[in-house]
Length: 77
Image (tube, rainbow, N blue to C red; front, side, top):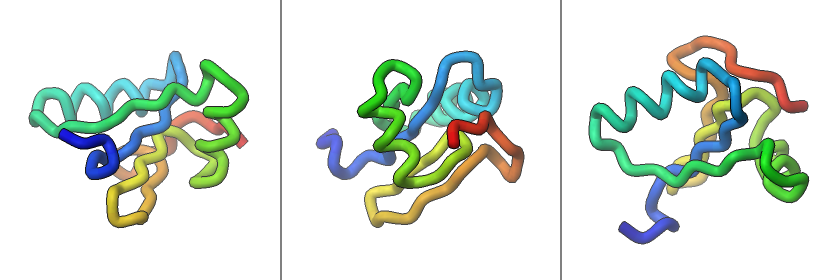
């Protein structure tokens, strides 16, 4: 599937909410592009444009969502 039609999920290592989201989506067969915000300053800056709590999901239609199932993730602001 072409990446521009997949949701982008910003995560960081050690974030329980990130792991829970990705585990759930994997088990449901939902495709996504994971971007680890903790691996480079460029990726962190990109994630911060969309929010300050990972996981941050950017859907193909441009809407964003922070956290997972109403729970707070890890603060990156």
